[in-house]
Length: 442
Ligand code: GDP
Image 1 (tube, rainbow, N blue to C red):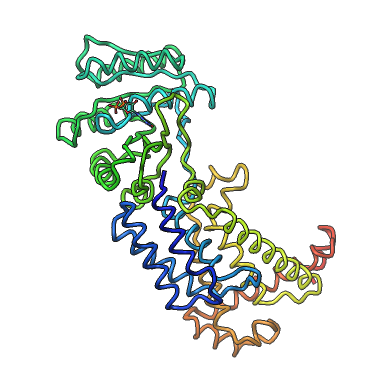
Image 2: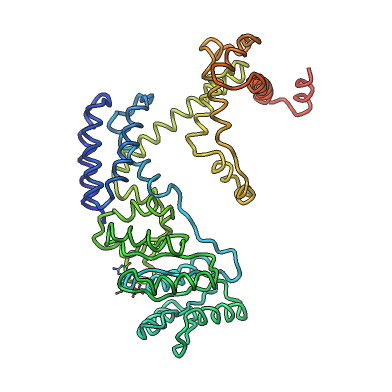
C-alpha cells in the first residue's frame, strides 16, 4: 500500500536533511517534489497545491526554537501534521445511541458493500458487544441475498431477507420492526449498487434513506479506483448526504489518492478501511496512523515530538517558577495561550475532559476570544508586556487604539489578568481556599 507515494515523499524530504536552515530556495525545491508525489498518487492538483502551500508557509514561518532538531527533521514533522489534518485529524466513530441503530450501506456494485456489511456486523458483535441484524435490500441480484446469507452465517449474526419481495423500502421497514420486536441493537441494511452512477439507483437509495431515517449512512468505495473513487463519493454525497466513507480493498495496490482526498472533497470522514476478503479484515480509520504509513519516517516524527515535549516541559517549569515569584507577565500569558492552541481548538480540548464532551455538543465556544486577547497583548510594548504594572490609563488608551478594541475591553482584560495572576500565585504557594478568598478581598 502507498509504496510509490512513500518512496517519492521520502526522496522529496531527504534533500533537506543535510541543510542547516530552511530557506525559500531549498523549501521550494522540496515542496515541488512533494506536490509531484501527491499528484502521481492521484490526489487532485488543487488539493496537492493547497497542501504544499500550507507546508511551505509553516516551514518558512516557524522559527525553529528546538535546538536539537534539524530543519529537515522539522520539515518531516510539518508534512506529517498536514497529512493528518488533510485526512480529518481525528478518528470518527459510529453513532450507536439509538435503539435499534440503523446503518445504511451504499455504494457501487462490486465496491465491497456486502463484504463490508458482514465485517461491520462482526466488528459490532465482537468488539462492541451488540446484537446485530443484517438485512438484504438488494432485490435485483438474486445472488446478493445468498451471498449475505453465507456471510451472516459465517460471522454468526441473524439475517432478515424476503426473496419474494421486490420493494427495498418495505423490506427495510419490516427489518426495523423485526429488530424492535426482538431487541436487536443494530440493523445493517445492505443495498443494491449499479456498475456506474445511475439515476434509478440514486433515487432508490435516497428514498430509502428518507423513509428509514438511518442514524448512519456509510458509503463504500473501492480505494483502488483513485480519483474515480473521489468523484463517485462526491456524487453520492450530493444526493444522499452520507455520514462517512468506507475505503475497501486497501490491501490492494492503492496509490493513496482516495484516502488522502475524500475528506477534503466531500467534507465527510473516512470511518473504516477494509483490508481483505476475510471477515476480520476491517480497521477503524485513524488519520495519524494512516499518515504514518504513507510517510513512514516514524523515527524522525517521534524524535521531533519528543523534543517538542521536552521544550514544552522546560517552558512550563519556567512559567511555574515565575508564577511562584509573582513575576507572571503578558509574555508568559502569550506563551501559555500558544501552548493551548497547539493542542487544538478550545472546544475539542474541553471535549477531552470526561463527561464534558457531550454537554458541549451544542455549545459554541468562541476561539475568537483568543484572538482578541492576543491582539491586545501584541499592541503592548515589550516593556509593558514584562511589567504589567506600567499599564496606566494613557497606555491602556494607546493599546486600545492599536488593536482596534474599545478601552473597556482592554481594561477588563487587564483586570482579569491581574486577578488570574494573584490567584495563580496563591495557588502556587499551596494556600488553602479560605486564605485565598481572604487575600483576594484585600
Ligand atoms: P458489493 O457488490 O458492493 O456488495 O461488493 P462485494 O462485497 O460483493 O465485493 C466485491 C468483491 O470484492 C468480492 O469478490 C469481495 O470478496 C471483494 N472484496 C470486498 N472487500 C474487499 C477488500 O477489502 N479486499 C479485497 N482484496 N477484496 C475485497
